[in-house]
Each structure stands twice: as C-alpha cells, then as structure tokens.
Image 1 (cartoon, rainbow, N blue to C red):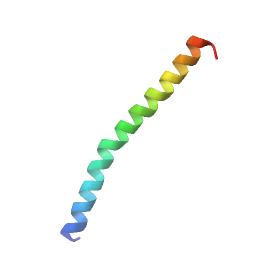
Image 2: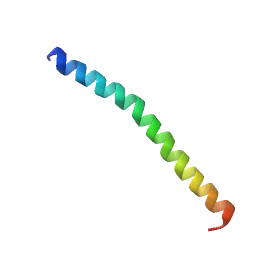
Image 3: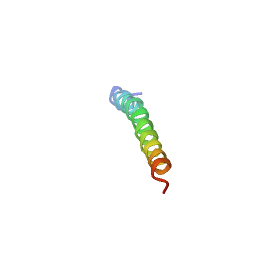
Image 4: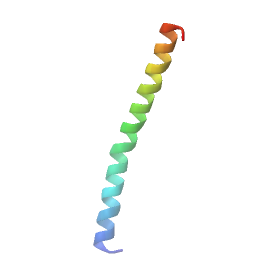
Amino acid sequence: MSLDLKKKVTIFLFVLVILVPTLVILVNAYFGFTLYHRAVTGH
C-alpha cells in the first residue's frame, strides 16, 4: 500500500466519520420536525 493511497483512505474515513453522524442528525431532526408539525397542525 502506497503512502498516497493510505493518506486518501485516511481522509476518506475521517470525512465519513464526521459527515455520516451529521447527516443522520439532520435527517432525524427533519423527520422529527415534520412529524411534530403534522401532529400540532393536524395535517
């Protein structure tokens, strides 16, 4: 395994570790807000 490839894989994993939880939180917040709004307004 070359150093350049290892560096790319490390950066990819690092970005994945940061982006995935952020995305999950955003999706959960969006769906949670939508369901809450629906429950409150009755639509």
